Length: 113
Length: 113
Image (cartoon, rainbow over all chains, first blue to last red; front, top):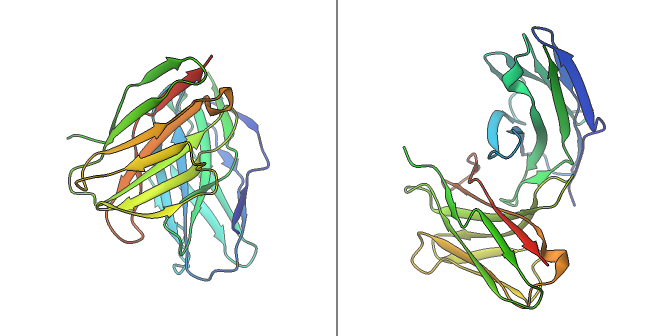
């Protein structure tokens, strides 16, 4: 079974600074997809970024980028120029041959003004 | 633009009662997923539908849980004889067919007293 591990329960960053959230996963599949979702307090989960495993190029979405290391099974999220609105729980998720998402336990990000 | 909606948003019930939740997916999405999220954890997969067919169920889904999607549009998740351990956030997500991004609703928070 696939597993996703987020080793940082909490992280904090100063406004305008850069922060990196870590995620590792375990799988024997070769084709899969990786996601970062953001869940603000009492609000719904929204997609931040998606990476297809067959693509060597790291995905980017404005201030959000990933460092995808397939051999190491590592998928970290970098948030540049952090904003107060970035404060949330961030979940790393895996989707392989089964359609379900497998989530990590999440990292709570605090942005300090 | 109508995203995924869920009703009710909050439900308090007494142990032993039955509860039913509803999820309305994004209109053109033929896949619908149910997840459960407990405090401090990432969401865990429960079941998913493609159109009206229920294609996968987690072992987490005990025989007290039943889900339907009778016309391939909205879905209901029923929990019979609720237990305190059922207290959680129940999330619904929908997607197009294939390895497509899942979009989440706001969730139904269940408290069993």
